[in-house]
Image (tube, rainbow, N blue to C red; front, side, top):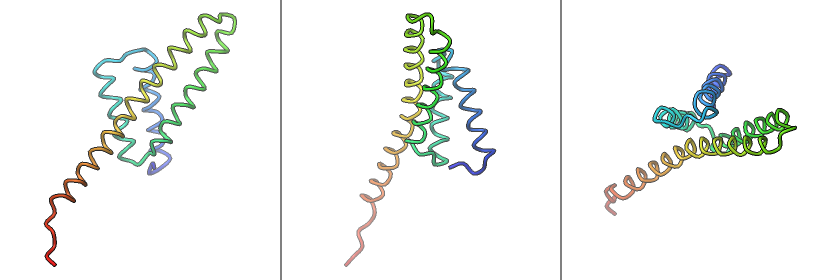
Length: 124
């Protein structure tokens, strides 16, 4: 997937920065859209499996929910509200990044289809 441990660390740092800059602040503007799609595109290009990619979101969500449960243990209504919001923004971000995979898979299928349909037939 990643060419080196350093490349994996850069990807990790970029994803962390993305979540801190956009996702966890609820900043879903045009910059967010571009950044999220760029991350999805880069991960697709370097061969990060979509199941691995979406699984990483599950790990982050699990860690954030555990943190919320500890911090808000004496405030159940606040705990539920924050956990629900975190769940929504993580899945929004994951869905948008995963949609890049879908778009690129469809593009590849369309290109393959065009290539197969427009190749001259060999003469027998």
